[in-house]
Length: 267
Image (cartoon, rainbow, N blue to C red):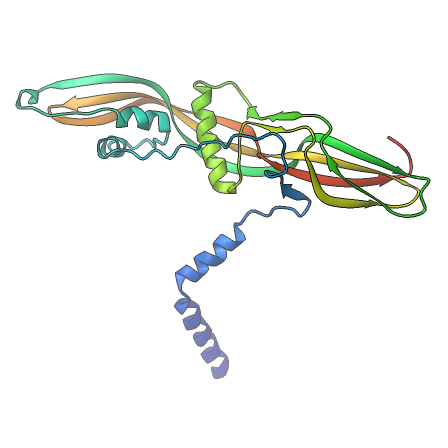
């Protein structure tokens, strides 16, 4: 019994000595995106050069940071941060005793993600077919885009300041998936890859190609923003705060997913 107790104590001490950084590395590994083998990046093969989506990387100025910290309501709307960055406040002796409340408008303040899921078969963009019903040997088939195809995403509902909400959701989804996302992407005519699939004798082969998309779900917070001035001190006051549930489909740029199917009868 003593040996068992000693063994338990040793195991407990060893567990406590494991560096937290190691545990963090294991967690990050488990959170890596699992891209299926049936999918591939065709950014080099795509005959239509999709422009890269420029995600905002705006940093708040010292004044903007101070204003954002002055309210308990989270603000991560880059358009609002830009407005605050372009503002300046200079105190004077004459400002003593001055009070002012400046209405900056009704804004989507932040977006909080609740679920991010990828549908690798979001929209079919191509079907390549080969008839091997009279053949005695295997034949091969490969992807060849027969017509230019645009795939669009969008929000699940109408919301105020739609473009700002889309941008916040796009930034969040891109950060979580590490994939090139855009609400619109194009697969150019004649796009093809070297990957081949076998079609058995006496069978017809259908190679279906899909563009994947991310389904982003969460809540957007709205509020009326006021700049409060008391003497030479400034702060933000956010009133009439509301939240709205929202979801969106955001296509993955320059990625396709293949599904091969064989059948004895034509479709």
